[in-house]
Image (tube, rainbow, N blue to C red; front, side, top):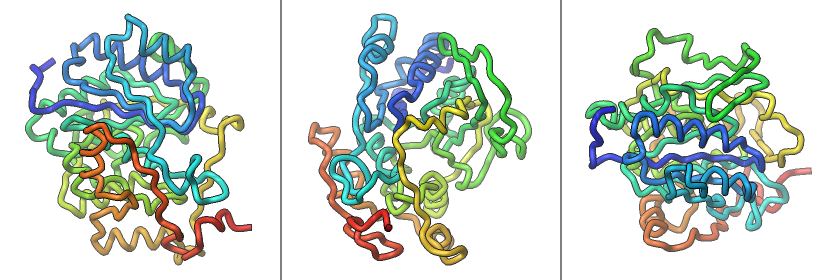
Length: 327
């Protein structure tokens, strides 16, 4: 591994809304890769964002055990807001990954952050690609987009894939459009949140993930286009690969988070958002008491996350959030 650049370091962020996210897959795969290439000095914090209490035995085995060679692990609920959780204004919980990812950004004391999704295992070479990008003068300034593959009956043993069943619809289409395994230029629309590395300063320059995507999703594509509108550059890195357990995404025992794209295509919420991006939108309004940059400063200084009670109305339909979901 190249020598650590002490001006650059990493926060690894794992975001989940499931009570059983297969966290052990991710942590075990991280542990053996970091041990193998000596990457721990570059990793300053691991942030796990979840609205559920993780299994205590699992946390003790994975994080508190002497075998896990890293102790700065922050397990946190998403910043309290209007779309989900005990402070929601809606009658039911809605999808709002933008807020969860902003929560991780606020807890990142480092120059860079890397996002991973739940139900995933880091494939061999994932962390090496992250470290190579961090230590590159060119790539460290860019947004690095990792790859994914969704498979069935994923069996992971000690952080390594032991077996799986192929799931052709789960192949990352981006891998079919590139040649070779080295990072190569791409557009902002490829900034999928399942495996993504970015300079913190780049994310703060657009005020983080856009909470106007709450209820809609597509927060990662919106983020990528706003970053591109702001002038940031992107690369797609096929070696930064994760495998996900496809059928676990549809486990009926998981809590349901509603998604809503009101309107009739092409006059719906998603098309309006796309038009705003085409018109140059490069700043996420969000609804925290302060811009995300200042909120991060406050959180890193030890202040608690604020209880956010805005917006009161849906930006696209004008409905009061207390009326949602509509009958």
